[in-house]
Amino acid sequence: MKNSEGSTSLPADLAHYTLLHLPRTSLRILIRQPLSLSPTKKKIMPVSLNTTVVRVALLALCGFSSIAQAQALNPQEQALHVLNRLAYGPRPGDVAAVEKMGARNYIDAQLNPQRIPLPPELQARLDGLATYQLSATQLYVQYGPPSFPGKDASPEEKNAARQRAARDITPQTHLARVWLATESPRQLQEVMTEFWLNHFNVFEGKEWVRYWTGDYEKNAVRPYALGNFRELLGSVVHHPAMLYYLDNWLSSGANTPDAKGRFKGLNENYARELMELHTLGVNGGYSQNDVITLARVLTGWTINERGMQQGATPFAFNPRRHDNGSKQFLGKPLAVNGYQEGEAALDILAHHPATARFIAVKLSEYFVSDQPDPALVDKLTQSFLSSNGDIKTVLHTLFNSPQFWSRSNYQSQFKTPYQYVISTLRATATPVVNIKPVDGVLRQFGQPLYGWLTPEGYKYSQETWLTPDAILRRINFANSLSNGKSPIARPENTPPAADVAPISTAALEQTLTPILSKEDADTVAAAPVNLQTGLILGGPAFMKR
Image (cartoon, rainbow, N blue to C red):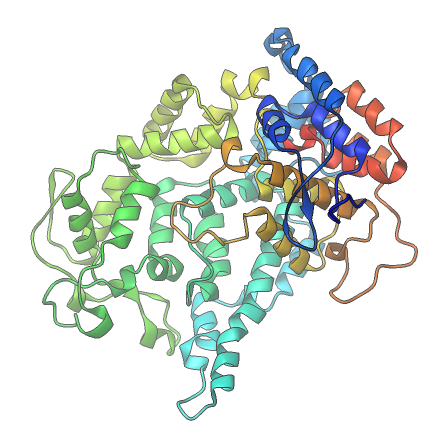
């Protein structure tokens, strides 16, 4: 509906429902300045809201009782809880299936993804993505500089050659990621793949990184997402996407024989982020001297440009660019041993107590609470150290902790844009045929795939994502799916089928049981049919996990 300023405002029933159920923090934001989005001007516009609704909402929220917080989760709630935390929310029938098998059994199954077969139809679609099947070497040769036209080519020809990767590789990389997130029964593996991709962030928009983003996810991260942290770290360090993103491939020891041209000089970028963001953490007890030492250790760890043109793997160690001087790292001498110095440094970092605590905090924040319990962090730290960095063991400890099962942490985390979009597609069983609308929504929401420029990756906290703009955009997205005619579910430039059916509210409510309270269900039932799906998916209960 249009307001007096020509913007699209929220339908009254939807605004009423949303305000009545928003958390206190977001309600305060909306009360200060009720907003809507102008689709034509792409800016925030005021919305007229009944002040009585706001007062009622405040009374309802302020009168919330904490008595229920002490109650244990019932089996149905346990099923929903693990589907929201170990998975991207339920698909139709999932809550009942997990309740039947038991939440603990579901956890055990998810911790062993190798025992869960991918659906043949999903595997066939993945196999049909031509660029997704190419090796890192093939991607570089077929889409990188070796494939570019010569000096005599026109500017248009040169530009077209450089655009091929974005045209061919990127959509297939994104399709594979979203297909697996929405359809793979190995949900915890996909959740942990996202977690580690964010932890070891690379930016797709940085030149050559675009060739390798899909391979980085597929071969460097996903196979190790539930494995050993040292093996995962080593896989990431050796991958050309990371070597290129943080410039280590250019780093050379001072006055080494091959330190020439663009390879001249020490580059500290990767060494710094390897300690600050990937292992020890910013308060992990290292110094600037340690950063310099680690950078020297990793000199010569590079990308084999020439070798790839002959079919070699991308990683290479060039001893003619390696700093062979003596080194003291984190208070201990490192033996001068060429390439093996780097492996020794990675061993030290992967098994360091500060790394264990840093990973424990991040896992607690992701799976339990934005403000993790120190006792849980201590327990996970010890689990990491005693298991030699076995990720599965650490997660088993986390999922068996009282903090994970506490009602105070049930339906308590505000979904990130990615979690919200994927969980919406899963709940509505919307098939992803066209990736462009999904990419567009994630970009509009502020979390495009592989789109964070700086190495710290996206944040997961409610503080980051809970804004009036975000809420309204999510409601609009939910409404766009409700009639079953979303462009996501059909090939690009294809009209919707004439007999397409809208999303069934009854089926959606059954899928999401027990997210909706009786009051929520009554509100939905009383609303016009065309608003009901939007009320459920755009409501605060679904925006949390």
